[in-house]
Image 1 (cartoon, rainbow, N blue to C red):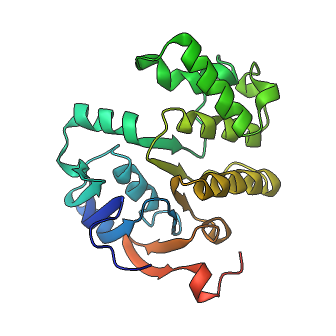
Image 2: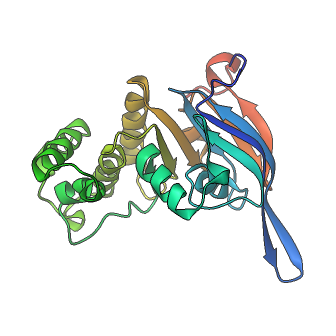
Length: 240
């Protein structure tokens, strides 16, 4: 765990996200502070409505918090405007969602290439990079299959390849096994763990404690607050 001495890749200070609901205010996040080191596999767990997806959206620059600050590297993303946030997401973050979010009319290869269409890479470079990543996630034989021709687990592996195509500093995975059977979910988790061993920083959000147990360090949210933190490797209570 060690001291954080400002070297953390992600630093969050006193993050709050409040939503008005009629006369009430829902405190989706109520004073969250955390840090994630470069190369870490970090887990965020909690029941539905605990604030974990809200936290993921803020870490990924998809929303502005009510209060608090987030740094990614030396960039304080909570100060960025919409255009700067879009640029930050493009360059720094790879997203993996529960619903895969693939484009149905495109092949696996075209889905993975898609984020590069707006970069200055050539079509040949885009194709080479997409093929390399699809082979990397075990789908070299499925390049020209559309999402409907792939299983859920295969679709999620396409989504992971797409998340990696810009070589992001951080992969944010929000319930990446939520729509998969246990075998496919296990395969996706093992793939994320392998990518992490190769040096990729991964933050995984799940309501399933077994999913989060794969992470090196984790925290548990309840009602927008951190109620527990742990490291299964040192505390021994999570036999993943």
